[in-house]
Structure formats: C-alpha cells, structure tokens
Length: 439
Ligand SMILES: NC(=O)C1=CN([C@@H]2O[C@H](COP(=O)(O)OP(=O)(O)OC[C@H]3O[C@@H](n4cnc5c(N)ncnc54)[C@H](O)[C@@H]3O)[C@@H](O)[C@H]2O)C=CC1
Ligand SMILES: O=C(O)[C@H]1O[C@H](OP(=O)(O)OP(=O)(O)OC[C@H]2O[C@@H](n3ccc(=O)[nH]c3=O)[C@H](O)[C@@H]2O)[C@H](O)[C@@H](O)[C@@H]1O
Image 1 (cartoon, rainbow, N blue to C red):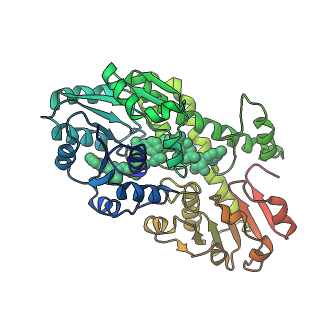
Image 2: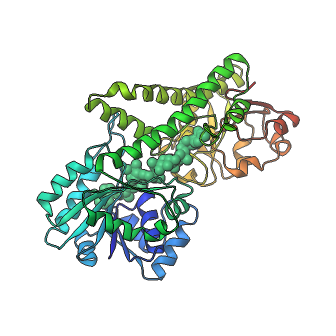
Image 3: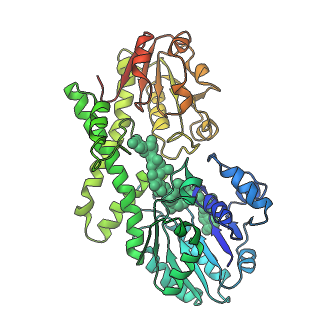
C-alpha cells in the first residue's frame, strides 16, 4: 500500500515524513514548485525541530519523494493507495468562515488523476467545517467512482510536530465502510499496538472533534486571560491563581498560562470558522461564547500595547522599543497571526522605533513587516531601548542575565508578555518588571 500526501506545508510534510518513518513508501505533492524542489533536496522550508533530519533519513532510505504533478503521483501510487489531503483552510478575507478553495481544488485534482484507477482511499486531514467530508464524498462519487473518502483530523502542535505524529494522544477516523476503517487501522498499526486510543466514527463527528478540541484549548487560554484582567483590577496575581487552579486535576495546568494569548495558523481561525459554520447550521447561540473567547484574546494584544505606552511615560512617539520574539510561539518560525508581531506593528504605528529579534522567525517577519527594524541578537535589539517587550517565550530569553542587558538599554523597563521570565531576578537587578495580570 503506497501513501501520498497532498499539500506539504507544516502538517503535510510532517505527516509524509512520519508515515515513511512508520515504514511506508510515501510521495508528497504540492502546487508550490519551489517548496517541492526544496523538499526533494532534503530542505524543510520552515523550522520544526527534528523534521529535517527525519525527512533526510527517509529520502535517503528511498521511502520518501516529492512531486508537483498529480498525474505522476497517481501513476506512482497505483491501485489500493491511500491519499491524504492536508492543504490549508485559512480564514476568508473579511469573514469568519474558512476558505475552502484549496481543499476543493486538491480533492478535485486527485479525483481526476485517479479517475480510471481501481480502489483507493482519499483521506482528509485538513481542519474543515462540519459537512465538508460528506460534500466531498458526493463530488468524488462523480469524478472517481472507485475512490472512497475518509476523514482523519490532525492534532499535532507546531514545535512538537514529529513527536505528536508518532506518539499522538489519540487517533480519530471518520469512515463510511469497514474497508476504509481497515485501511486506516493498517496504516496506524504500529501506533495502535502502542495503545494509542482510536475513535472510529462518522464524518461529522470526526470533523467536529477537531474544531471542538481547538475551541476548548482556546477557552482555557482565554479563561485564564480573563482572570488576568480581573487580577489586574483587583491587585491580585494571576500566575499564583493559575498555579493554585492547576493543582485541581479536574482543571489541570496545561493551557492555563496567562499572557499575550493565542495566535498561529490554527486556534484563531478555527474558532471563527466554527462560529461561522454553527451560524449556517442555525445553532449560532451554542457557540456565542467563542466570540467572547476571541474578544478576550484580542484584548490581550491591545492591553500589552497600552502597558508599553504607560511604561514610556504616556507616549510611544519617538521611543525605542525592543521586541523579543516574532513567532506565534517558541520552537517555531511560524508568524501566522502572531500576537508578538501584531503588538510590534501597533507600537510602530504609534510612532515608536521598534526593533524585533527572534531566534528563528526573523526572516519571515521581515517579509511580512518590512517597516519594522530587525536585530541579529536579543542584546542588539535591546540597544538604547526605552522598554523591552518579551512576547515569545524562547528559552534563550530566560537565559539572559538582567544585569548584562541593563548595560545595553536606555531605561531598565521590561514587559513580560508571556509570564515566563524570572520576575524576582529582573527586579533584583534594578528593572521595572511588568506582566499582564500581576502586581
Ligand atoms: N500547522 C499545524 O500545526 C496543523 C494544521 N492543521 C490543519 O492542516 C491544514 C494545513 O495546515 P498547514 O500545514 O499549517 O498549512 P500550510 O499553508 O503550511 O500548507 C498548506 C500547503 O498546501 C499547498 N496547497 C494549496 N493548494 C494545493 C493544491 N490544490 N494541491 C496541492 N497542494 C496545495 C500549499 O502550497 C501549502 O504548501 C489546515 O487545515 C490546518 O488547519 C491541523 C493540525 C495541525
Ligand atoms: O489545529 C492545529 O493546527 C493545532 O493547533 C494548536 O497547536 P499550535 O497552534 O501549534 O500551538 P499551541 O501550542 O496550541 O499554541 C497556540 C497559541 O496559544 C498560546 N498559548 C498556549 C498555551 C497557554 O497556556 N497559553 C497561551 O497563550 C501560544 O503562545 C500560541 O500562541 C493545538 O494545540 C494542536 O493540538 C492543533 O493540532
């Protein structure tokens, strides 16, 4: 059984390399020919720990290859193949709904390419509005009658993508036949042998598990950030509050870290697309709370800008602001809906000179925000700064000596947007340390 992965972005290339690691022959396809050339050459065009090494091993072992040609892919895969589709589902411009253009185009292209082949399984991995799999199954029935559709949502986190794919918390498959279930059980046999829980369900439930999981994670983060707002008003400490909550195993401490809030290519757009889809289904009230989750999250960005202005004596005009972090989270160079860059750009718009440093995401940030200044090190960014904003919690920022950084800046003022620095150490070195939701 050969495997193909259509759409080799953050998700697809990880899935392709990990399926090869599980022993299958895999071919990845992308319409971006430059990306395909880089991948074929063993270069992952983004930063994901461990992925490039794994991909090179699998290419060298002859189990992993790439193309941009659907006909070549179909001919290589042959009858009985499993084709995964992992193209993007970004938010539509000016709307909450997901843009399904890429998913529809990818399914149409693979369906046409395999139209005259024997049986195959086409498995959606992209995060989609509920109802998509059924709609696509109808379309495939017309274009490629021997092909069957299944849905297998993905739960990996960027920064831990390889580990999460090879050791997932659970597998969820939406299927309409025993054969489809058997194919997917065969593919994931090694993980199932390691007792990874498997949920076999219908299309709609599989699609909904994915968006409800991301919604729940967003709820946890916005809950603690709402508490940060209250703590700030009441003079309480949200970090201690979060710690105390986390000891209750019913609540748990994960995704309860207060700060600048969630960003990235998934959580923000997924909760919005979920709300849009609920509206279409006539149950928008059921998800009305997600609007508040989104609003709390966006307020964190505005509050961080306000705090920076307060620290700069009421005006950012002409001030020098150092921003540590550009990626939406550490261990990633992904800047999609990055809270750090959103704050940096707002501060720049208020007349400050903003210098950004990120260990991995500077090149991506420079392309998207060319009017900001960029530094090669955290210390360089801090030069003559009136205030430092710590907005993505890379380990290297925690390892900096506050006394040494103090020799670099104009004013020893730091805002910890991620509640990740050692507040006592910075204060002991003479800094004014501020964080959202803490005295
Ligand atoms: N990034 C992540 O950590 C996770 C992403 N997801 C979901 O997976 C999907 C993909 O996300 P990412 O990998 O982050 O997106 P991405 O934007 O990094 O990758 C998508 C890829 O699809 C390619 N593509 C677009 N149209 C195509 C077509 N017609 N045929 C072949 N390739 C095509 C693009 O060139 C791009 O390389 C989204 O639905 C996302 O919500 C789910 C779990 C984790
Ligand atoms: O659907 C997806 O693509 C993925 O979305 C998230 O993964 P990811 O976006 O890689 O990153 P997370 O680790 O979830 O972090 C998301 C954002 O929340 C923020 N966050 C996270 C945790 C926390 O306690 N507080 C907090 O503000 C992070 O800084 C980051 O900006 C989910 O965690 C994955 O399970 C899911 O597969």
